[in-house]
Amino acid sequence: MKQIGQQIKRLFLLYTLILLSFFAGFTQLYGYLIEDNVINQQIRNEARYLQDHYHQTGTLLSPRYPWMKIIHRWQQLPQTVQEQHRQEPERIEFNTEAGNIHIVGLSVAPQQALLYAEVDAFTATNKVWPLNVAGVALLGTAIFALCSVVLMRSIGKIIAPLNRLRHRVESDSPQLLFPSGFTASLPDNEVGFLARAIEKQWHKLTSLLERESQFTRDISHELRTPVSILQNTLNQAGPMSPSDQKQARNQLDKLTKTLDVLTALARDESQLRRPLNVLSLLENVTMTLSLSGLRPDFELVVNVPEDYQVVANETLLYLLFRNLIENAHYHGSENTLRIAIRKQSLQFSNQNNPSTGGQQETSVSPLGIGQGLFLARRIVDFHHGTLTAQTLVEHNNKYFTVGITLPLPAPHAPVSC
Image (tube, rainbow, N blue to C red; front, side, top):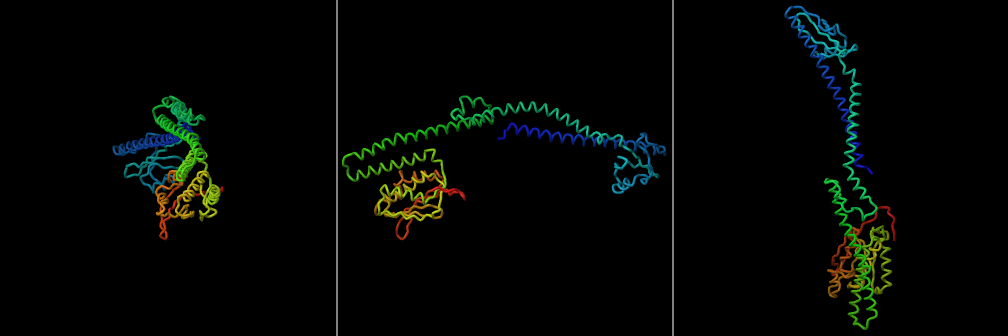
C-alpha cells in the first residue's frame, strides 16, 4: 500500500531537483548575458573615444587596451568571419577557430577602420560553468538536506493522525475500532473530519447490524416457538368446522412461509450467490411439492431451456419458486401454471377468472408468498433483479403473470444445479 508521507517526500525531492536544475541553468544564462553586455559596452565606449578623438584631431589613435587593435579591411579577417559579416552586416560578435572576437566599425571617413577585440581572455562564464553547476549543486544539496530534516519532521506530525486512523481501521477488533475520545484527539482538519464521519457511520452500521441480529434471533426463537405450539394445538384440538380449520391452517402456513423467507434474507449465508440451473431447481421444487400435497390434477407446464442459468442464492431462489407455484396451486382459477422464458424474464402465468373471486384478489395481493408480493420483491431486490406483476388478456381469458429477471452469470462461469 502506498503511503501518503512517502509520496510527499518523493514529490518534494523531485520538485527540489527540478528547481535546482532551473536555478543552475538560469545563473549560467544570466552570467553569460551580463558578461557579454559588459564586454560589448566597453568596446563601444572605446570606439566612441577613438571616433571623437579622430573628429577633433584628424588622427586615429591606437586602442588603449592591449586586447584591442585597429584593422582597415574585412579581408584581413578569417574567411569564416567575412562570410558571417556578409550574411549579417550588423553582427558584432563572431566565433572563430582562434576564439571569440568582437568587431565594431569606426566612423573615420574617408578611410575604413574596424575596432577588433579578442575577448576570450575576459569571458569566464563558458570556462567556469562546471564550477557554477557544482557550486549550485553543492549549495542546493546543503539547502535540500536542511529543508528535508525540517520537512520530514513536519510531514511526520501531519501524517501521524492519518496513520493512527489507518491503524484503527485495520484493527482486528471491530468493537474497539473507535474507542472513547479517539476522534477528539485528532486535529480539526480534513483528517479529523474524515475520522468523525467514519465513526458516525460506523456506529450507525454497528447499531443496524445489532438490530438485524436481534431481529433474526427473535424470528428464530420468539416466533418459531409459538408457531410450533399453534401447529401442535391445531393437531390436538377438538373438532373444528372445515372452514375454520382451513383458515387456521392457511394462516399458519402463511406465517411459516413468511418466517422462512425473512430468516433466509437475514442470514449471512444469503450473501453467497452462484450460477444456478433454473430448470433443475424448478424440478427440485416440484418434486418436493408433489410429496407435500399438490393436487394430482394440477399441471405444471415448464418451457425453460436446459442451459438457462441465473446468479442467485439457492435457498432464497428455492423459496421464491416454491411460493409462486403454491400461489398458483391454491389460488389460481385453473389447474395449470405455465413457466416460460420471455425476453430473459422468467414468467409464471395462470388463468385469472373473476367469477371465482380467488384470483381477482391475487391480482392485487397474491397470497402465495406471505404478505402479497412484498416478500417476493424482497428476494428479487436482494439479488438486484426486477419483478413485474400484471394481468394479460388472451383469447377472452385473463392471465395473471409474474415476471422475474435476475442477473445472468458471466460467460464460462461454472454452473451449479
